[in-house]
Length: 231
Image (cartoon, rainbow, N blue to C red):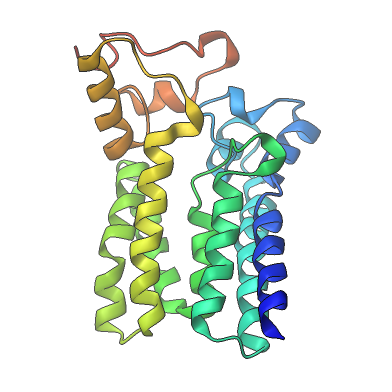
């Protein structure tokens, strides 16, 4: 009897995750398509850079709680932590690959935080500390380090077994999305492709200059040159 309910919950979680609130805010307030600005991600970070600092608050809250709600519902309906985690992962998948924007989405950090908010609240504090450090150093690097070291927090604070599994899933999803980069084209030569993929993996961008990357506009959304990628 619970299996049909679980299937419906997973599909609903993906569709909920696919709601591109950051994209909608950009269209309403600035009449821009966030996919054509900065990193091209449909995310609160691009809302901050290209729409307005205050607009980050509703976008971030929506993206966090769209994961928290189905995760909480799974726990509330006694489906267990594993099903709750699966619901959260479906939301993250919808956020990163939203069906409503032809699978062109964000990076999933906000719904990851939303999932942890229900299943392992200390993990939220852990990630937020790294995100705050990211304001001083390299934001993509610090976010990545937060995810990589999250298992340490789970171990030290005796988190549930499901969260140990979740940390690995979060990291794999993040790496996959960084490398896939919303299907952004790669350079033609093999050497340049390798350089760009390394930049995506480490810094979540195709060029070395972080500020130049996040402030791009539709006029300069061109493929990386050899000088950009360090060749």
